[in-house]
Amino acid sequence: MLRRLFTGNARGKADEIDVAQVVAARDAGNVQIVDVRELNEWNRGHIHGSIHIPLGDLATRHTEVTQGIQVVTVCQSGRRSLDAVQRLAPVGFTNAVSLAGGIQAWRDAQQPIER
Figure 1 (tube, helix red, strand yellow):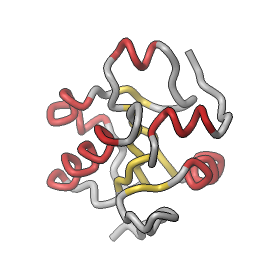
Figure 2: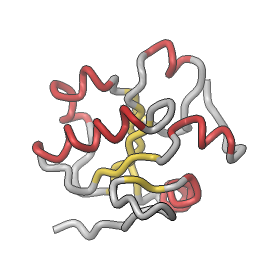
Figure 3: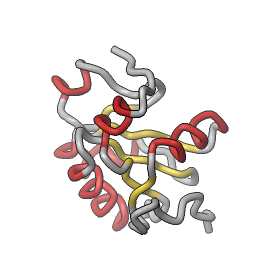
C-alpha cells in the first residue's frame, strides 16, 4: 500500500495540501500534478509538469494518472480539485489530495506559471 505523503494542511483538512508541500514534493519528484480546470483556464497558465484532465473528463481519462505516487489535483480556487479527489478515490487513487486555494494560491505564493 502507498504511504500517504501528506496528512493535511494548516487548516487540518486531510484532503488538501498547501503550496509549500506541493513544491517540495514536485522538487523531490514524488508527485503527479493533475490540473482539472477547463482548457481556456489551462491555457492562461498552469504548473510546470502538470497534466491537464478537465474535471468532466476525469471519469474516462483517470487511466492517464499515474498509480503508485502521490497525486495533487489543481483547479482555480480548490473546489473542483476537491471534487476530483473524491472522483479518483473509487478508482483506486487513495493517494490524491487537492492544492488548497488552487492555482490562485500558487500565484499568490509567487510560484512560476507555464503557458
